[in-house]
Image (cartoon, rainbow, N blue to C red):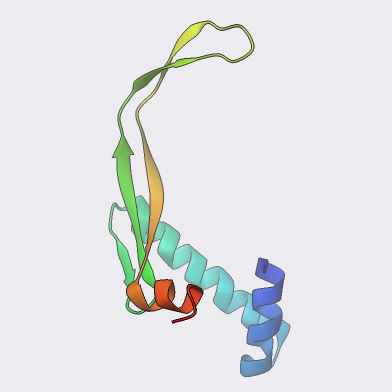
Length: 91
């Protein structure tokens, strides 16, 4: 499923594709803004989005074999909730 599929399915509930697209975009914006602020987004029954800090580390350029330093960064993570895990596993 891609974003367009999500919008199309949601359009059946809200009436138009335009409204559905606005809703989907706004939900994504809200999640993104919360993560930018370092907050987690907990969707009970679905899962939790959070930001984790990844330390700087040594790496290797695969083309040249040269040793490089990979900078520290913040990355988003998703941890599925139990109901989602069970649904995926058919329980």
